[in-house]
Length: 225
Image 1 (spheres, rainbow, N blue to C red):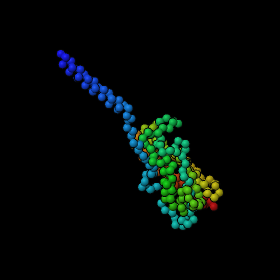
Image 2: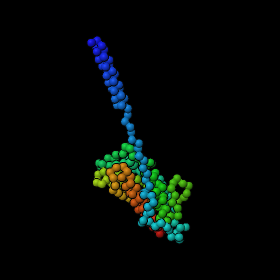
Image 3: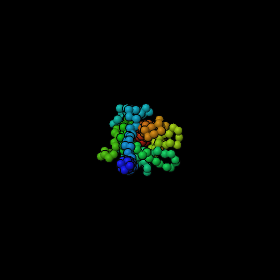
Image 4: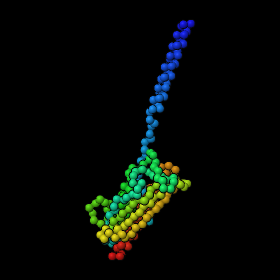
């Protein structure tokens, strides 16, 4: 009987030790932080490879030596849109951010070289120069991103991009023309990537409109002189 009691006690001790070990493992698992998904980074390229259909790609030969030089200042962005965070909207006046998806750079910075390339394609300017630069210019373009947001208030969701542009005579500081451009493009999927693709399409649309706007305003300014 005593031998059986000793065996029972030994077995109970082993079970107790195994239970403690299991509790310790569970406790460690609970204390260990959950794995955080790696963020995904996206860029604005304005649908690279797509040529603006409404904008002439070459300038008349006679205009090349007399066309103005355009200086493009760095684009600005309204409050809330001046960071790399990708914004989405479910309620009016409420901006939210995707947790694990970001732009590789603030949209205003990514927009600058796209502006230069699109306006150069018009052939309406002798040169298009992005500041900072030591080059002198005849006209200056100031731009501001008013909004760039993925809106989930409709089905399908859409990306809305609004840009304000002002063309100024760089010598007299006179405003020659200004306009607010707006584009809304449906997203192909209800996720950050669908919004990024739609954002690039919206940017391409506005680049075409802005390039045409600058070319026409520059020609009108030359005719007035």
